[in-house]
Length: 135
Image (tube, rainbow, N blue to C red):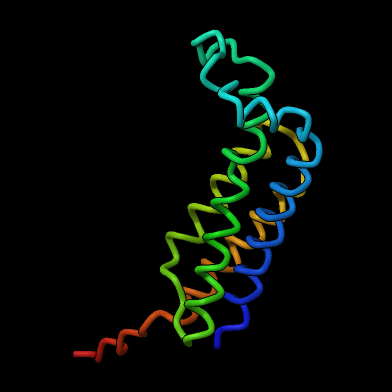
C-alpha cells in the first residue's frame, strides 16, 4: 500500500465531497427549481445564466463530485498496492493551480498538494532502469 497515494486520494475525496456538500447546503433553495425543470427554462445562453443554472454549476456540476470519485479511485488503486500514473497527479495539480489563479486562495490548495503527492508517489513507484554500463 502506497501511503502517499492514500493521502493524496484522501485529500481529493475530502475536498471534492466537502465542496459539494457545502455548496448544496448554500444553494438548497434552488434544488426544487432544478427538479421542476428550472435548468431547462433558463434564458438559453451560457453567457448569462440564471441563478438556478449558476447554483447547479457551482454544486452538482462542479469539480467536487468528479474530484471525490477520482479520490475514491486513487484510494482503491493504492489499497491494491498500485499507484496511478503520474500524469493524473500532475493534471489535478495543474487544474487546481488554474482554479486558484481564477478564484484566489481557497481549500482547492489541498488539491494542489494531493496532486503533487500523487505525482511523487507515482515517481517513487516507477520501475527503475538499470544504470548504463561504462564502455
